[in-house]
Image (cartoon, rainbow, N blue to C red; front, side, top):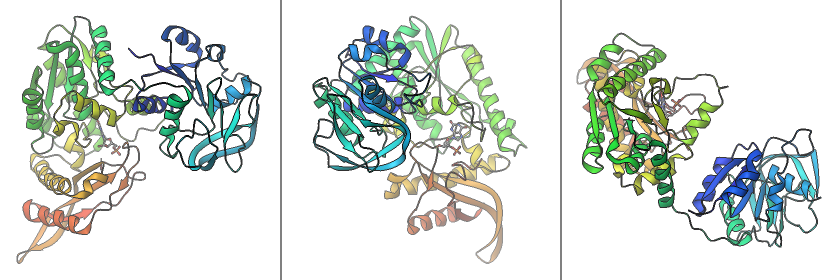
Amino acid sequence: MSRPVLIIDFGAQYAQLIARRVREIGFYSEIVPCERAAEAIAARRPQALILTGGPDSVTAEGAKALPPAVLSSGLPTLGICYGMHLLAHALGGEVTSGQVREYGRTDLSSEPSALFTGLPRYLTVWMSHGDTVMRPPAGFKAVGRTRTVPVAAMEDRERRLFAVQFHPEVAHTDRGADMLRNFLVIGAGLTPDWTMGDAIALAVERVKEEVGSGRAIVALSGGVDSAVAAALVHRAIGGRLQAVFVDHGLLRQGEADLVEAGFTRDYPLPFLRVNAEERFLAGLAGVSDPEEKRRRIGAMFIDVFKEAAERLPGVEFLVQGTLYPDVIESGGGQAAVIKSHHNVGGLPAEIGFRLIEPLRDLFKDEVRQIGRELGLPERLVDRQPFPGPGLAVRVVGEVSPERLALARAADAIVTEEIERSEARRDLWQYFAVLTGARSVGVMGDGRTYLEVVAIRAVGSADGMTADWGRLPAPLLERMANRIVTEVAGVGRVVYDITSKPPGTIEWE
Ligand code: XMP
C-alpha cells in the first residue's frame, strides 16, 4: 500500500476536506490528532505532512504545540493557517496575535514559487484567522501577500517546508486544489499513485479484518449510501452479507421494484424483500403530526427489520451507509432538533449488532464514484436523496392510501419532466408535496374543490442549506398542466420559492 500523506490535525474544521482533496489529487492520506503525530510518523512512514488549521493562537497558554517529530522527520511539510503559525513560531519567525483579522474571501497576490506554479498571479482565497505571520523565519521566502497580511504564503524550497495563511482545501479558494497538488508534486517531489480502485481495495481489506468469518446484514433503503455500503461489504465477505429491504409502501412510483431488480438482477447479492405496506399504513392511520409520523415510521421500521433479522440466525454485524457529513451533523450535539432525521435506514446500535460503517470518511460524490467502480447500476448510484420516512413527509396531514396515491402520481410527473429537462443538472432534489390545502376551481362547467400540490425543486451542495430552483416557466407550466389533468383529485399546483433556511427542503 502507498505510504500516506499524513494530515496532522490541530482541531481543524476542515481536516476531512483536506484528506478528500489529497485523495482527489491521487495520494493516499490519513488524519491523526496532533497528540499522536510522533508515533504516526514513526509507524506510518508518511511521504509528506500537512499541518491543519485549528482554533488556538500559538502565543496563548495551553495552545497545541508543534510536535518536535514534524521538523526532525525532515519530511516535506505544508502548514495551513494554524499549521503555518506553528512552523513560523517554531523556526524563529514573527507571529502576532489579534492585530490583523481576516474572515472570508480575500485577494491574494503571489510571487513565482513552487506553491503557485502555473497559477494566475492574483487569486481569491478563503481566510479565517486572528494570528498573522509578520516576518518569515530565516530560510523562508514570502511568496504571497494580501492587502493586510505581509506573509500569506511562504516557502523554504531547500528544507521542503511550505505554508499558507488561507485555506486551499475549501471551494471558495480559487485553484486551491492546484496549490495542494503543487505542494505534493513540485514542492515535495512526489508522484500521484492512489486511485479510487485502491480506496476500494483498502476499504474491502478493513471490512474483511473486522468481520472475520462472521455474518452481516444491511438495511437497504433504496438510496445511494446503503446501496454502496452493501456492495462494498459484499465484495469483502460475499454471501455472508444479507441485504434486507423493507418496502414500507411510502416509496416513489416504481421504486421498490427498481431496488429489487438492482440487487437481484444487476448487482446480485442475498436479498430479502419484506412487504410491509399494510402495516405501515395501519400504523399511520389518523396521524397528522409530522414528528409523530416520523416516530411511528422509525419504530415500525425497527420492528420489521428485527423480525426479519431473527429469521437470519448467526448475524453479528450491521452495515450502515453513514457518510462523513452525517457524522459531522450528529457530532455536535448542540444543534436544536429541527426534525428527527435518520430515523429510518439509520438503525440504532442498541438493536444488538456491531456496526460497520465503511463510508464514514467519505463525501457523497466520492461514494457515488465508488458505487460506479463497484459496478452498481447507474439508476441506483445517480439518484436524488430521498428521506427515510418517504412520501409520508410529503403528504401533509393524514397519510391515507388515496392521498398517498395522489402524491405518488404527482411526484412521478415532476420527476419525469425535470429529468427530461436541462434544469436537472443544477438541482439537488425535486418532488411534489400534497400540501393538505384544498382549493376551489372550475373544470368543464362545474365547480371543483380539490387538493393543492406544491412542486419543490432545490439546488444544494449537501442538503444543509438550499436555494429554490429557478425553473423555466414552460417547464413549470407543463408540470402543472399534467398534474391537474392526469391526477384526478388535484385541482391546483403551486411552486415553492422558499430557500433553506428559513424553510427546510422537505415540508415535514
Ligand atoms: P430538510 O427537510 O431537513 O432535509 O431540509 C435535508 C435533507 O435530508 C433529507 N431528509 C431525510 N433523510 N431521513 C433521511 O435519511 C430523514 O428522516 C430525512 N428527512 C429529510 C431531505 O430529503 C434532504 O435531502
